[in-house]
Image (tube, rainbow, N blue to C red; front, side, top):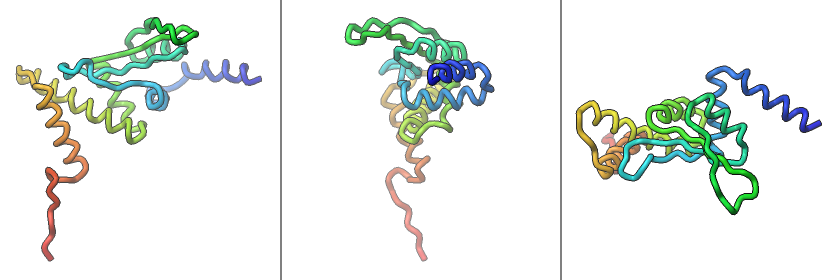
Length: 158
């Protein structure tokens, strides 16, 4: 009985609206995905998921692009697969799933979106930012978001 219900539920993913797909993906990514910079020197961002459920990764590929590839890991008995997207496609997905992520994961995605925004801004200006400047700008943006002014607390006079 449970198997029949699971088969029926898996077919329902095709019936989701576009917004529902991003909500579903946010829940899945919150538990399974890695959000990171493409490389330490890069300002590009990436989303990757590694798991043994090929059908779920194929759904992610169908909805958001990217590719699914086998991963060889001798520690895992079942076949292991990886799906990933990067660049503008990853930025677009991160923006859409952000409102539905838990706080810790949402914070990481905000940091990566800031890094990606710096990259786009610098490409428009025709210059490249160093990783240190990106980290500094990200820290400043986070402080502003939290309502602090560079670590100094403003005092009110009565």
